[in-house]
Length: 450
Image 1 (cartoon, rainbow, N blue to C red):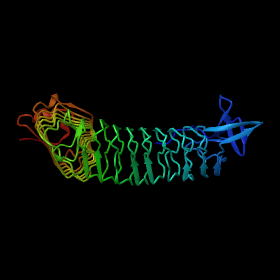
Image 2 (cartoon, helix red, strand yellow):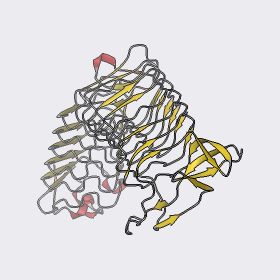
Image 3 (cartoon, rainbow, N blue to C red):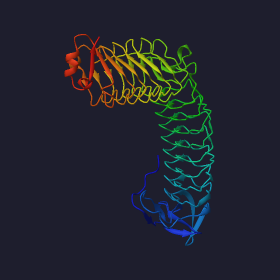
């Protein structure tokens, strides 16, 4: 996510003094200064780039600076100091600096390398977002890496030292060239989407100290092949490894009290509830699983068959979203609910059977599964969400086992884009008149009792 800046182009100036071509603000203690901008470049996405470019080339920030007979220690870099300086190539930061402000190097496209001071304790929000940074050494006193700190950088390798306890939301998101990621033991929390869309990352070795993995933490890390969840992990967010197309192995380390990979199922199951929270192309769903979580198999394009055991009662939102290789689905057993867009985008799906226990079909559950030829809807269905079967271009027959069709709660455009002239609707004996009177169902031209 890009740093949000002003909506109109402008160039602002605000500093206490300038020495050696660099601008400074005097801190409240009267003894130290923070380096700041001379011309703060603010962007508008629909306006021309400003003509003034601020700091250029290589910059060396001194440890001390004198002004009007007073010598000040340089201890900080203000927020947005170098933001948008497209021709900035190198910055040497002295060891006296302990704080670098929010967005200090955002949009510095030519900045490829920087050495951070060893006293730095936090890398703040958006510090290097959308910069040209290719390498970084994170100091061993840093405890937190802030939101979007390295978002959309050109980094190729990163070592997270053991001092870092928390990596915040989107910190390394969209670092598409990141190939090597090493965690030293000590890290406890990986935030939401922290490493999402790191598409070149192949190996992922999580530290034994880790406790929390946020929603979509490694979403679309499409080259990662295997993941082992450490025994220390107590929280895994929705879609933490979703759309990792190369993922063939997921397992939970022995000794984990919250999760397991029972029967070598190649998936992550919440032990106490039986909820399967994450799987991959090589997974199977073992008996005893009660729920398939939101996003559990999101983007598992290599999955071709699906066997849902009788213990499963609920399939979450987007649980099998974009499983492009899936050919046949039989939802039987005890399943009572299918979540929103749960099978949306399953382009190879040809046969769909919905068992007699199912009560609720969510919004867009089978949206644009345009190879489905036959659909069977079970007798217990009470509600069908908007667009549930929209865009089933190839469907030739729908068999509904619902006896009291008038009682079914129908969302908007449930059957939109289905060819009502070509598709035959088969209904229970003695119910054709009711179907011909029911909103949406009555649009089928061929309603046949069987």
